Length: 79
Figure (cartoon, rainbow, N blue to C red):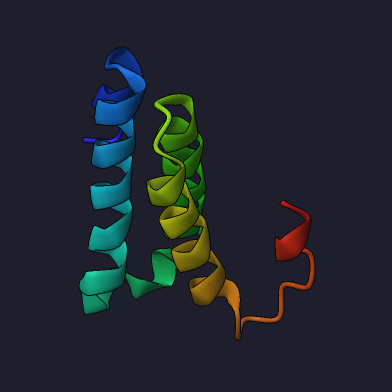
């Protein structure tokens, strides 16, 4: 799903990446993939920005931050 997003326009790519990332958060057995989830959310945010959808980009970035908030990664704010 996420790999198909590379061939689409930025908005469609962002939507696919965001939905794929959120699947990792919703499925208890996949919760160990939080890094992959947050990476996809950040990439989705970049695609939303490229599509001129800044509010959606900020939503992806803030969700990514919430996942990392209590995991001890001090440099999340650098990105």
